Image (cartoon, rainbow, N blue to C red; front, side):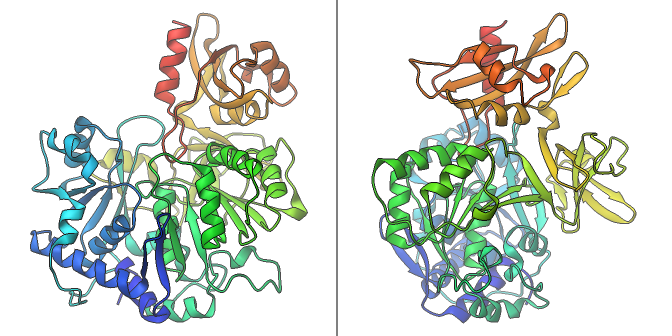
Length: 537
């Protein structure tokens, strides 16, 4: 047996017995034995349709219990599930089917029109519901698997066409899914995961509980990131490989009131947000009526900025939450640095984008040399250890992103940061979005974190526009809290001036009804550029 996702899941399923594995917002549920058998049937169905070991299977699916069944079915067959964004048009589906080398594409019924418009549909293209209705054995009669089996995650990043990040399953298990024993010694054998889960039923949150705190009898978790994105996938698989109960929100349009009702109904202990994009509506829902949120112990967040004032408001609104966990991460490097805020370390309004690095993380200069903390020099975040194999079909991008230094492989996803003398990391943002104004570099996320603290700013993206004198000027694309009382450029500058160097201040402001973001909370900077260009040609 290997550190392979299906093998690990089977060990856990055998250990926990009839515990509930999945439950959705409509009340449907599967126990671990039921989920195991459903995934076995799916794996045999894939085999019957000619999907072989190592073949890539696209999953163009919304959040659902069946989506999880399909993922596990692929891993059991030793096929490679490939996440496909359900928002894609026929043209975008064509790109991913070709670039992702898809042999099969399983989709939800509402994507039939987009799929039928593809010019190069995979050989097996069918609704998932149709595949799951087929009559196949529910037994585990599969060939041995390997920790070298691939895990692929397509990521759109902030700009450009989607790209497939390829991992060994063993590496992604330890890098992103908890490694089977969070907070304790790493597992030495995959078959030990069952005992680890039984000994520590709340293992994903155990490291954040105070000494002596009993924790929940079982971990119930919900991630607001969709399963077609990294945070949703890793949260789902991490919960299942920890023997927990995964709650699935099947809503097509997020209603945070419904989410809080799920917390109350299912006694959720861990809720993972998508930065301010979901945290602020969550606060609005909590203020609208009284809910029983006493089961909540840990909030997580990733994919987008979670502002300091929002963290404070969440701790005030959710009195049983012990900690808020944030991480700098990407599809190429799931957790480079973390921020843990507790009631004993209440955040200030300005505490955003500040993290403690993992031991495997350094900041490197343009010559790939470590930058000594405290020098005030920005560099690229780099992480060693368990890193991806590379990008699917793109050796040049792989060579730029994954480098070897002193015999060790390092991954440099593209985020820039500065380290204080004590090692504290201040995230600046993605280098590809950097604005060059008068020879100075401005990182949009740093400016956005400050502007979000303005009382009239609900959301914001920052981009650069051509400037005859400075090369580029900083432009803020702002969605106001109240359209009747929007912020002015003067008020935004006045608010930001004590917190940012003068060259980082927005020189222009564009008001919009809403800022466009992906379901994972990432800002649509291409859209923001178009908006800014229309306002300032």
